[in-house]
Image 1 (tube, one colour):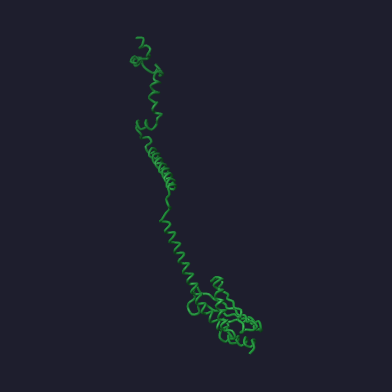
Image 2 (image 1 turned 90 degrees about the vertical axis):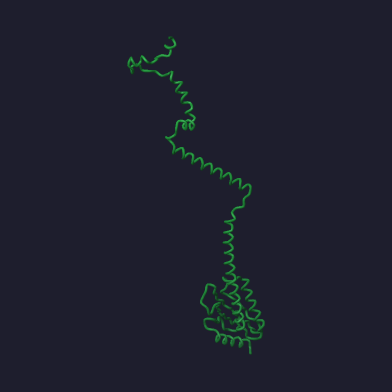
Length: 237
């Protein structure tokens, strides 16, 4: 049987195995036969956010099945790294090598189904690792809050200066508020101690009494008789 006949018969067999939604023959012309088969990571359970679809691309070389086909995987680029996808393709190529001389697409698809199971576990572990990393990150942030900042002599000195300045400002503000509340109710002694300018008030008054002038027209003669009008007159007597 020629290569062309083997390829055409295999296409017919595959179309009988897989549904129209799963298999797509892009080209039926020998020697450029090309097809794709779509597989789901979750075929039986309820859909989840972790599900993915993968498309297996197969291109037959002219001498297939005596040569392995060109194998590609698509649709999972966002879910897995290029390295992991390349690793999966290499596994499928190894299966193809084991089946040289025989039609092998079904064997490759079966191997891909097994590989999808491994990819599901890879994605699951990656998700769990991400959750664990986030958990450790939050725990580290919480520990940092409780640990505080490491105290050094320099940092303590800066803190002490700031604390003393703030404390002094609070005391000064409290004292100003206290004095404001006492305004108008201070004793003479308190006023004297509070305002040094009052210290000179008595001296000023004493020095000024010699300069006091009395308007005699404001008093009766009898009232004036009891007053010493001129200190110089006393000195003359």
